Each structure stands twice: as structure tokens, then as C-alpha cells.
Length: 277
Image (cartoon, rainbow, N blue to C red; front, top):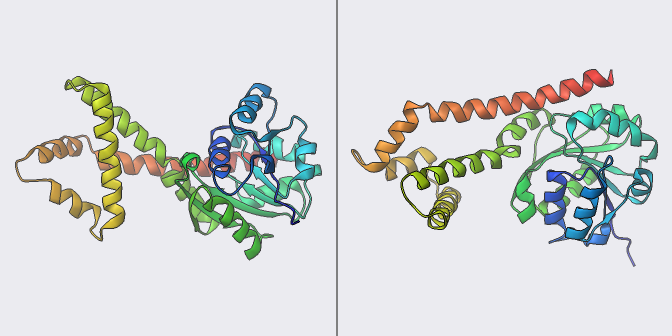
């Protein structure tokens, strides 16, 4: 009987949970997944109870059994955390990092061995199998490692291979992207309340509006600007609303938001590098 892949998560935060939720609904059995974190046993107990995966306080024990190690701790904790487990990582293991801003070279340097590292940037929609994930190979990773990582992330959504230097942009765009949409929905819900709509009625209308618009974008060849113009009749309600968004420089704000998130990804990587040095 062929041995099943064992995956160890180093970190049990929101991204790790989203991936675990998606992976255990598709290709992986809960017993194939081991989760550990720095010291939060309450969080581990929640993860174990919710997803029926294995949890382990002793990181060396978790790593010993793993074929794939997923680095999912907070970026600010990465240098200390990776250095503390480097002795237990073997060159036969595939390291997958979902750490924002942290390069594969930095990870290899922290581990101190020529390990295969694939860097990935999924988003929390992985929990429902709808992540948009970009992946990139480190210097010691080959096509087989990339294929393994791609198959893993395809269990939680779509996957695109990119050059590593593009991952900062991906982080700002799709990695953080769900939060931008949620922020928009928050505003729409507040507006609905102020104009007198019941909460549940408004929620259904807002969600279907977003789902419908996204589906339209996916299924038509028309550009977003054209679709917007088709909805915007001269002198009509949509034109009035768009006029307010233009007054507040809505597009410029969104562009600046994504650029700033991408810059922050770079800053996190540089901060970790300076700590390591």
C-alpha cells in the first residue's frame, strides 16, 4: 500500500486554518495533517476539534513524520521560529511557505541546508475551495516540487506559477484581496441600514450583487469599464452613485491600497532579513 503524504503545519493562524479547512474537504484525510504552533495549546485544541487533524506540541515530533512542511507562522516570528526547527528539517522534505514577504533564499539561509522551498501566496477563501494562489520555486526546488505544491493548492482553489519577485504584487492584490471585498460589503451594509432596508434583505441583495458581477466578469469578454458603462445610464441612479465615488477618488484609493499592501510585503521581508543578519 502506497504511503500517504503527511503534511505538517508550522503555525495555526487564519491562513493555516483556511488551508486545512479546504484540504480536508477535498484530497487529504485529517490524519494526514499535523498542526503545531509556538505555544497556544487552546488554539491547537480548537483546530483538532474542528477539523479532526492531529496536533502536536513538540515541533520535532511533528516534523519527523512530515513529507511536506508548511510554514504558516506570523512573518514577524518567522526568523526565530524557522531557526528553532532547522535542526529537525531534512533535505528530503518539501518546504512550502505562505509567509508574506519572506523570500525562499531567506528561508534556505535560516534552515542552513539546501532544502527545496516553494513560496506560495493563497488567500483565506481557501477555506471554501475558492482561493487564488500564486506559487514560485526557490533555488533548490525543481519541477516535481512545483507540481506537488500546485496539486496541494489546487485542492483549495486556482493556482498560478509566477516569478518570485512578483509575489509581493500578488500579496497586495489577491492575498489581501478578500479583505478589500469584505470592507466594501461592510460599507454597503451600513448604507443599506441608513436607507431603511432590513439587515437580512440587504445581505441577500448585496451578496447576490457581488456574486452576479463576479460571474459576469468571468463569463463575458467585455472589460469591466464596458460593463460599468452599460449599467450607467446618462442622468440615472448609477451615474449619480458613481459620481460620488469619483468625487472621493474611489479608484485611486483602491489602487493606493493595493500598492501599499505590496510595499508592506517587501518591508516584512526586509525586516526579517535584517533580523537574520
